[in-house]
Length: 108
Image 1 (cartoon, rainbow, N blue to C red):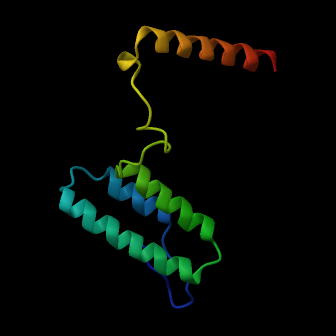
Image 2: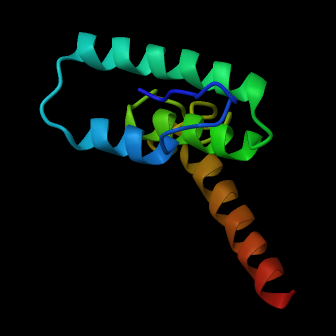
């Protein structure tokens, strides 16, 4: 667990603690959830007392990435139509638009 001393200084490295837990195998899902939530709470406590907000932010990002929060890459990840559901005319328009886009980007 990530702890602070009396001066509010972080005693353990955030990243090391997260990576150590991640590398220990195997984990029960309930154990992971409890540890993860406790770590978020500790990070929020550290955030109140530290000037190094970037380190806390990066630690949260590391937690999210390693422990599968199922965060999509962007908001468009689940929007739109699948190519196989397009009719022939729509597919041709799509291909034409993509070709134009590649031509434009290669001329820049």
